Length: 274
Image (tube, rainbow, N blue to C red; front, top):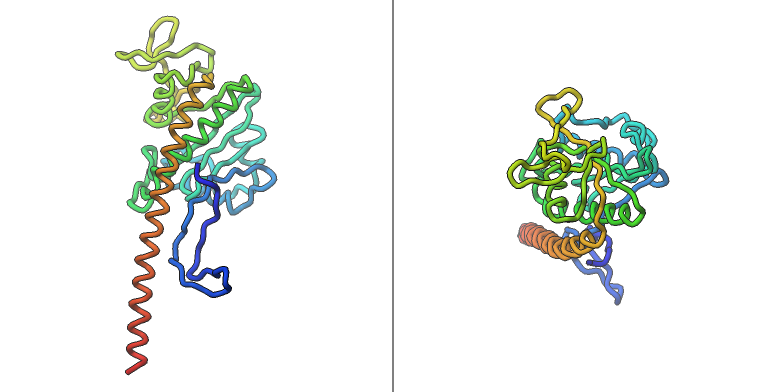
């Protein structure tokens, strides 16, 4: 993995000899995702996640609002304890998880701006979607590994046309076993898709808050730790490549800004000389 480094913003940097050198106005390094708990979550981070939710979800799916003041309110909304909120390095995705009443891990909310579940997919929001997907997948694998090592399930209410697709992929790879909320095992059938293991019948979905076009399934994931660790190694290698590309993109942008500034500065100097 790339080492965690701070972003460098600004036009100048002090050298070892004390001189000042012009630097591109861009970030040189990519930060890691940030994890927030009751101790360090502020209104600033709450504003970030409510803003992401407004861009990523259809209006009828949004549960957060701008009146939320602290993590206790977020825990109340999702019915969890010991909540943790992860925000991506570019502040274009977040994940909320904690513990449910059964003592298992509850992944309560997960949103990426510009991803397939995003309501608004502008060219600007899609600029870092590869980085967001790589980062969030790495975090999800980390959560699954820790849960598996602690003998916990990971539960989530999965939307059929978005998050359940990713869960099905993990199931097909043998990374997890999955059960519905009544503890019925669910397997993948090449012809039918997801079916109940005992009778081969297709699974039944529930409507999200009465919205018939949003089908959900409560899923309990039993992590298969060692295969997930191997998959996480692959994701981390991909993440390094995506971060390197992000750094290069930022440097190119900064170089272009520098060239524009130099052109303006030269024109101003020429005008002064006249």
